[in-house]
Length: 127
Image (cartoon, rainbow, N blue to C red; front, top):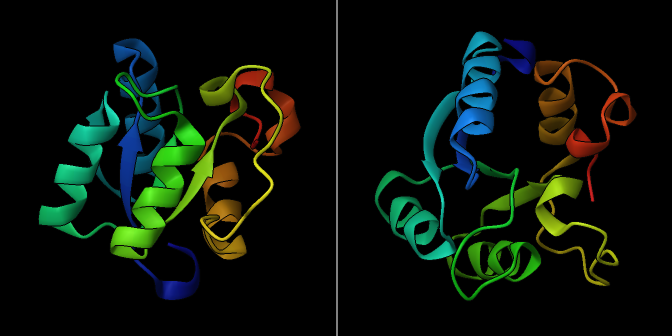
């Protein structure tokens, strides 16, 4: 595991097949994975109990909150940064604020776990 840090990832994904694939890839790279949570409310409840160090929002969560709103709430409530994949926001414009973003070293580890450069697959691109 790079940098000697064990990240605990809160996986937010409403697609069961993609969730399993991402969970397997993250585990293979040494991440501990919580979830997947399909809704923002479920993800917030998991965060309250397990204290993740970072969140990966791979698909738009079900329920009221959109991906960026969830990421802001997660940072504001629990101090947990997020990486949002483009598939989670569709073609929406990126949010203007970025205080909820994961630290660059955490995001870089995601891209290594997910198969290299984020541009390799449009659905795995960061927002």
